[in-house]
Length: 273
Image (cartoon, rainbow, N blue to C red; front, side):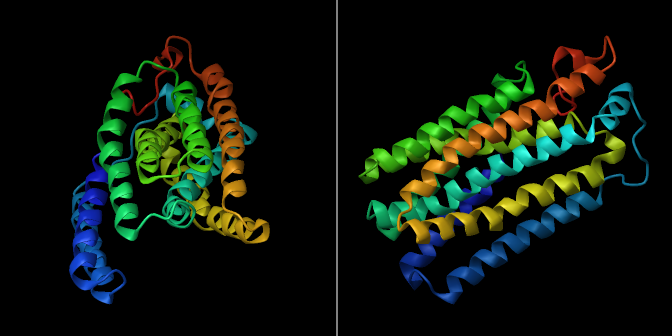
């Protein structure tokens, strides 16, 4: 949740730079690059202070996670890819859609994206706390109808900036929660001894949505001559993705959890921290 503070600061900086130096000047882009480079250096410095020499001791839950069947783990990754592809495309093409279909100005688009990030910060923090007692797949499932509603409103109702802001608020409510719930769910089927390799696979799968999903959406938009129809497909993909994630993180992990362990209470390792 706190990560969205950086997005808010960067968006404010970009809006100010564009106002004084123009929308697409090299100075504006270089200033943002320097900002992220400086913040990244601070993050790496903090990571270097962690204890990387002593591997964690295996627990009963770690042994159970290591025995999750490959098909279920694969189903989870496929579902996570579908969900993150929809989320990535919705956010990346939100501004393009709003500018061309609703005729918003660049400043209005920037302020709209700023609203998304302002809402996403507290919504992600509160979402994790308020729903910590819910089983993991259902927490993720709560975000899917909101995404579907936001997409439906965007393509069938949002014909003014005020209505686009309503859609942006809905996206902000679930943007961070969708990603955090997915990571927490994946941690429940990953032992700490396998965390490096398994989360590497998870990162590769979800980051593939950044280029593959965007490419497919752009290609369909050109072929169909519309951005509305490809956007509607995202709702179906979100539901399918959630179903795969729920199956991959559900029955197998709970069945393999030892009796009396915290896992049987529907908690994840992230929640136990």
